[in-house]
Length: 227
Image (cartoon, rainbow, N blue to C red; front, side, top):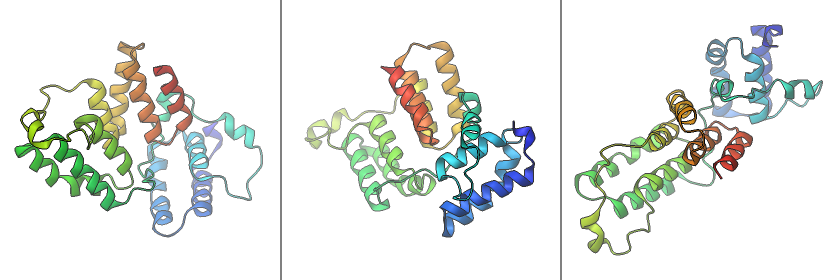
């Protein structure tokens, strides 16, 4: 169906969607990304428009044939992977709050050079993952443990976890999702599901992936499949 749309029509449609729902710097960022998105998703413009409508809503003046547009939604991971949005939702968490949480997690579970290295990386991580701080906290808790795990710091310090010699594919994929590297994450995810389709970890990671790109319905379906 994307063959019925011209580049100019898609550009105009995206501009209407962004302008009706965004403002200020966020609007400028979205408008500035349109040409790059159109180049990258050539031939899948109907899906791109559907994604924009789902994330930002339809312009008020456009109500015709909504059911037709619903049918054009991408319905497979292969199509969904192309429609990736990098600006996630930071929710209620402030930058200071995220910094404090990360530092608490690292101090509760690490020591020595590794602790210093991770604390020194906090500012860089917060800059790189701006707007995805809740997922960054989730990643840190899953990788290193809860910030409250170590109630007796001196007693547990000798048992602080050393760097794992080898990460599982699920853990590696989750890190890629948190880092916003959706292409590599999807490659890993496809491999996991093709090799171990009944492994609940694969579907848990799939749920995280779809949640990170704004497809909550597919995230929930994967979560249910994980059991």
